Length: 146
Image (cartoon, rainbow, N blue to C red; front, side, top):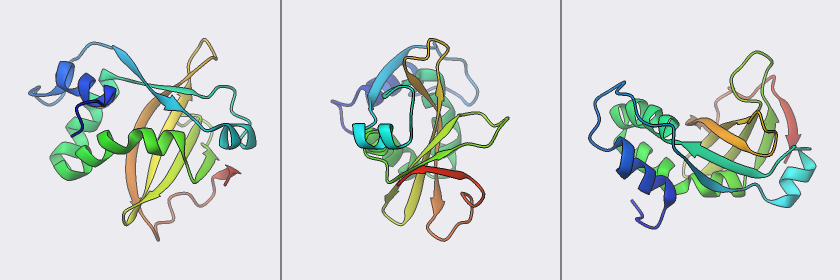
């Protein structure tokens, strides 16, 4: 993992070496700003996106157990997914995360679900996961920008 990455630093500080479901502080770090064209096209109310140690811990508990390389890839590439999404979808009502940022990397689409914070000035990452290129997961979602 890259050491100049604030998400990696958050992982080292609060997550590395923890046991599954161990509580971690809710410290947040800035991931990046959705590029202006994508944010405007999708009519996002904010461009800044943050991630909390709790979300990194959740990703660690799930992705690191299932596929450690996937966890490392997500931590090292989350900024690219956030700043330069290929598509932005509106999430379905009653689902966690208001929008889905999608970026094609390697042999997957990476989906980053984000939720507008109560201050309505920034988003926070809810989760990130890969899906196959032929997966129909996004069928039925409202495409906001591509």
